[in-house]
Image (cartoon, rainbow, N blue to C red; front, top):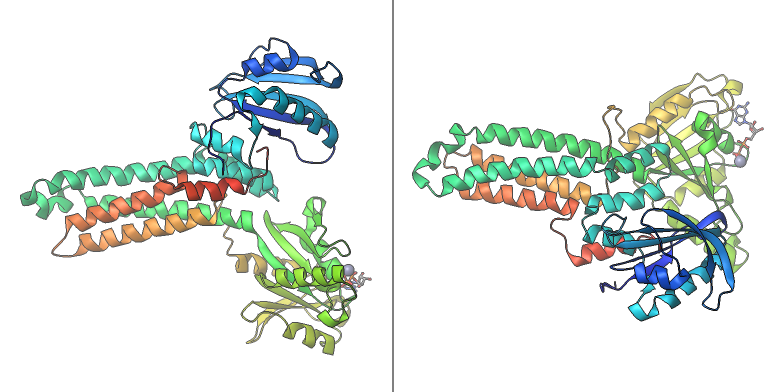
Length: 458
Ligand code: GDP
Ligand code: ZN
């Protein structure tokens, strides 16, 4: 990761064709660049319609130029945005032109996430907010997008700050007492330190719930769908997706087969791997197909739940048994007995030792609710109505670790020969953990990992 402070530029819009596309530059002083590029005086934060030309005056495109004077910009530096037509070639030409014009001031191509990294460096965003930028862009459901923008707005960061402040306050009390050992004995009583600590633990618990539920919206549930042709797999997906079917996003898995798609239940993305297209390794014809099959089995290895679909009018076939034997052990299996409208079974769910059996009709939509509820239960979803933060794994780990330190502080406080030193130290460690979330304490390594996962231009 490049950590110099030279100006940077990149195409900021998604690759491909679009109505408009944006080339963005950021740097400490971009006014001369804007001047050199198009020989116009740009008024800060005003849209100016100008011809984008090569150095020799030939036309590349016509579009809108907007100049943001730092610190009033996304990155906190001067930012120049050129909005042209959204074609890959024309944007590439425009980018080349910008890089050329900025050559003398050291302008270079931005690295992945570098605009957002600069925003972080210049205190426009804290770390949790910077991560929320990527999560908002990558959100696969409306609920996920809502939670990401909740985090981006700073609500999650504020909740963390509030916790840090309460811990800091308690630490100050304790540390003031450490200087007067004779008062140590009844300090915890007098200041109600244990009551305060209990309050912080409860508040942390609440934030953890909001964050871990939000993390579900981000990660979703990996579902593998197994079943013979015509057993009703497609019908089941449609029934499950229900009214949300319009937001179903097909993902082309390989060049040949659509192996994965995403539907959602209550905003939780279900990443469904349809095994209809998979075959055993020996059957694979050519190398492309082989790679596709390997990838599908790799995805299956990440399954949170396996849906094994059967026809309630017949038992499992031999093919069913053989394919199931290849699945990872320890992953919950739901046996879906479909077409009960024909077989006469009642919609029901019952757990036996090897699997949970659900009787339903994908055609009549009877019993679908039982399946939805069971999937939400497996995901760990609780509908609490509180606002959620689209947290990441590292946030959850930090919250858990902070909670552990607070628990230890509580233990120290509960002992008859209380050690205020140890009590204070656990508070300090809890505070450090919480602060890693917003980035007050964070290593360059962590920053590198976070920002390198962005695309170029973000
Ligand atoms: P897939 O090949 O496993 O994806 O199966 P489809 O979803 O394409 O369904 C195969 C056939 O079974 C279609 O004609 C569906 O209309 C029918 N089907 C699916 N589910 C049901 C059901 O619950 N009851 C009845 N009667 N027919 C169903
Ligand atoms: Zn199908």
